[in-house]
Image (cartoon, rainbow, N blue to C red; front, top):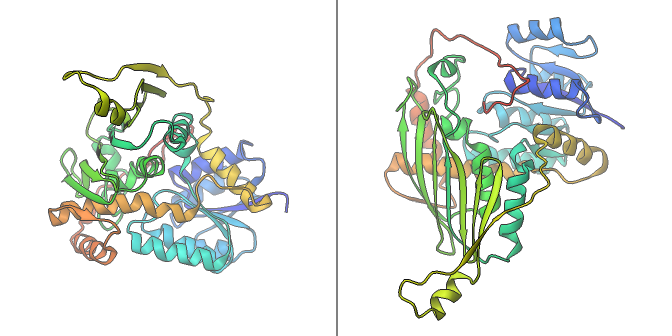
Length: 387
């Protein structure tokens, strides 16, 4: 095999974007040989716009049984990510899953077990891990030069969404269709990066507002507080209601503060670590001296294309993925814990009580309202979207 024959399950915004990247030659070791979508309008679009060499199927199962693909990219509504991944594993097909890995960790844990049994390549579309700022941030945190993490803060509110966005799909912003709001739709990348760089906390406390800024039933405003095993704390704030939003990620360490904002990484490096300074300093209002440094990075952020290219390299030559599929459970654990903390009205400890979360989620699914007057739209996939 010198090329991976890829089938795309779901030809919505992201599925179409991935197809375009591959068709435009950005993933030279991948060719799309088939697509599947249950939406007749998307099949009609595919028949009119995609070449005859790309077979079109109205169900994923037909495509998976066709013998035309070696791997599948799952790009469908959230609840069905594990379902279709496991259908692929049954057929020993390699799988790339769009974010999030699923809606609840119990479901994703079953998917991970199926992947291990199948012995195939399984990747997550965590394209933000390719961003030069976050890669460098992880390198500095893991390097040990700056000591331990003391505090983390991420304000990520720069993905404003108008009501029209939520009215563009029947599944959007419903418990039954999406399983959550900003935490499940916009934030999986940031939740993944947060734990990838800083590690997982041991306790989560959160306050969520449901339909605070939009006519929706799920959360569109979140403030979460976490505790880490070493005593450090963290805050995560997100919303789709801020028309002039912010994306600022800070990590306070023993000997430095790291700030990621506006595509740059700035470090305030202390002359002496804070633990050493506070132990030896005799001046009541003393403070360790610091130097502000704009950190040099390689400037590269290849995003989705790099994730797919590394996926192909893993299949063809056994090279490393950007993110293995089993890693998808970590960020989802944070999301589930935030929901559960708010629903119960108190902090929750990790590991998460997965059965309790599922029970509480299903209570909300049962009363989820049916959306009407939906105006479906597929976005301009030449642009980058957080779906």
